Length: 196
Image 1 (cartoon, rainbow, N blue to C red):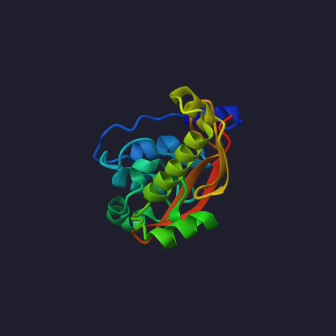
Image 2 (image 1 turned 30 degrees about the vertical axis):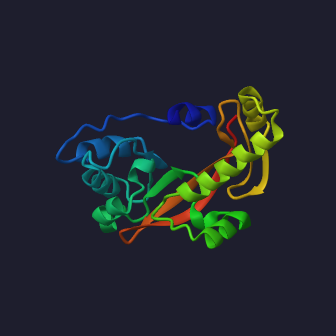
Image 3 (image 1 turned 90 degrees about the horizontal axis):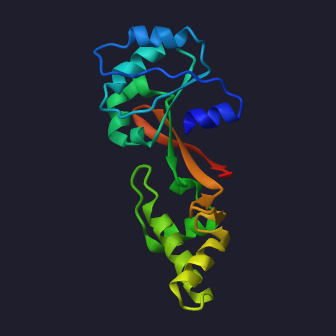
């Protein structure tokens, strides 16, 4: 999906395999030969990612490295340490510090404790509210509840303002952006992407 989206917005992309190896200097040199503006790693940190990132940074010191949510863990950040500085990782959902006023109020009033990049309590609360409202607007049948869910238009809710697409996904979709710094993951912001 990343490659298709990149092409659809006019970005040129190249794909390289990431086999489990002791060192990645040759792979990093092959990638550097294309002079990329960014490198998007797809995989798991357990696949010797720390060595790959170290070799990529040596070959491409000024290139942004982006990772998926499989890298969004404090233990991964600690293991990478200074090698990870500047690494960007994305996680579906709104980071707790970026929640709108209703979300901040929910956190204060509920006493919900958020660990790391987790977004569970606010998402669960918003989902419960949306479902109860859909039930209240329905005629009591399952089909009517589903219709009301798809007709939902949340304004200034716990997660912000959104509707649902035909698959039931939040639109615009919130994606938390995090940056590695000093062996920790810190919030860098949130982007909301329309699903069309």
